[in-house]
Length: 353
Image (tube, rainbow, N blue to C red; front, side):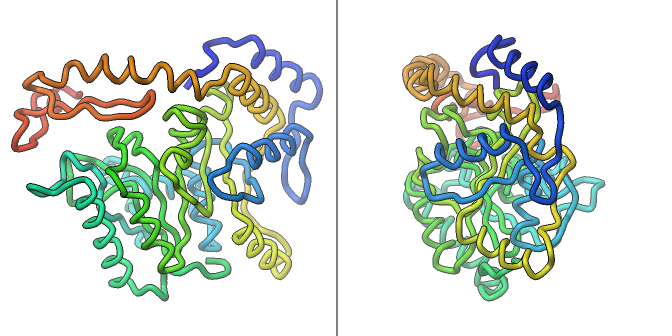
């Protein structure tokens, strides 16, 4: 996560300068600070996959995805509990009465593990898109479409628990590349077909860019790499290169207009965190983004990626390696008892790997 390197003097100086100028001020009731406003403007200019109008700051990726649920549902579900519901990881659900009942998980787009015999990546993507449409029709499209004041990962050992790509009543959330769920890039044509289904039923698309954003895939955002046109975007982690906590929600004009309209009726949009848009976090984020641009982080990743990917993939012929997958500077090795059928290497699981 430390793209500029550890203890980068410019980021340390940015934090120290802001601490000596204005160490804290809240972002409630139309209040803000210059670093917060400047960072919001910079993010809206940087994200070009589709037009975004507003930014809502949080303190982490989990809070960011929590906010994504609060925006369309007009309800608050707690910071991190909602993100755990969005996850497909069973340990995140056990003993917590999760996932929430309105969170629906659809198929994991892991081609190597779940494709049928003779099924191409394109065919696999078509099948998953068809399954998504069946899920929508089963729930009733009228209950899922975007209304005024209307996420996630796969656990690959449990195929009946279906992935990062999920519904929260009126929205579909997905990572461009599944991160904590196994580093799973989308199969060919997957997002084209999924977006067509989501658009057909007027369902919001949330792009979870918490892991993928800011050059990691060889593009500034994962949405750029896979031609994703989201309505809402979650970012965090590399926004400050991990130096200081921050997260942000990017909101498209259509959703922003609804929030404005309903806030005028209710008096305010009652969601926020005490340290949302923290001036020190925003100051460090602004300097981080300057460094990314000056050092051309995207081109650096593009140049490094082939050597990185090829070096790891050289081990593909090992009898205990079923698949090596990844893109950019994200990669994963899947260990297996044998390459066919595709069973996990149980000895590694028993030893905590």
